[in-house]
Image 1 (tube, one colour):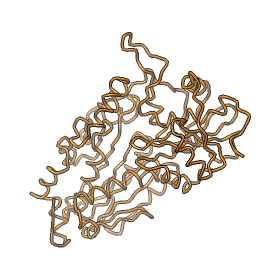
Image 2 (tube, one colour):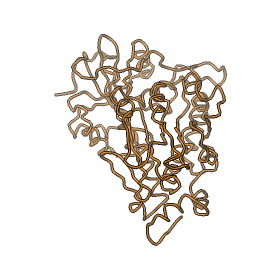
Image 3 (tube, helix red, strand yellow):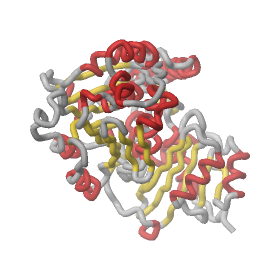
Image 4 (cartoon, rainbow, N blue to C red):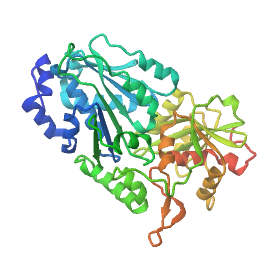
Length: 437
């Protein structure tokens, strides 16, 4: 690690060059990403398994480059489909990368602001800004991005499978103009990071199926990540045994297939989420800490299901999650059906004023919930990205002996699906007595 006497421009440059950079690489970079960090291809497309470390690597790579005097004039746009998702993902990842690299001098070298969200290197004046692409208004805002110092030269699209091909085209159009006069060391580049959920996805056809000189494709898995802990390895081995198809995607980073998918009757599109337009609206919640805690707002209209909103929290205790739900305006007088295995958490939600009750778990309830979901059209708002990811890969278990599918879903990476199953309880069972007073 670098331990300078005081923060100067020399510190910034040294952090990204020469022997000091080699020390950094040995300290907290994974060797598998070295070619990706060196490429100047216009499209750096990085697919990989969950836990491969690709997002951590990209964050560290950008912090080093934006801190380097050689790249003065460079600015970075970081994109998620839903703008708010940046706060707890890309912004946090880049913050952590800065502190990892610069240690106690970080606050002297990087300005970090949460509202509005941006990061700026004090020495190079290079800046990082964060945007969403969810809807026409956000796409239009991206078109008008300018910087007081330098140009937009790099774009990082995290969870790129959430975006449409049209979204990427809008972003790609932002990378234009002569850079030689500004700084001959600069180069345009768009970085896409993602788990390859479906072989039918447009990203595969555009970037992987035909080799192109302007495209650098990279593949990584959790097995390449020397920082993965033993518990995560054990979780992946469990998935390998229970869900070989899912393990291919989330363990090995291969393109997913559609066989054995539980739900195919859904459509992702924009729709009005105002509660008044639905016949009924309920909340469903699956509790978690190490794995995601998911809260869904689900509407019903004319016998069809509308997944309107999601809140996904990781490594937060119940009190923190309740505060986040209050901040986001989830209605307290709305019925909330929760995982029955966590009565203490349900009580905390009730004490906070929410209409939280345990979801019923009668014999065969999971299959009955799935049958209910399969029998109705499901509409998913584009903002519900966790729902989309899980729906695309939620599969039936396979019989190891016959290779056929069982009437049991794989119980891994299904947090939003559990919340959805709970949310449909009242409509499924036709209960007459409200849990609310």
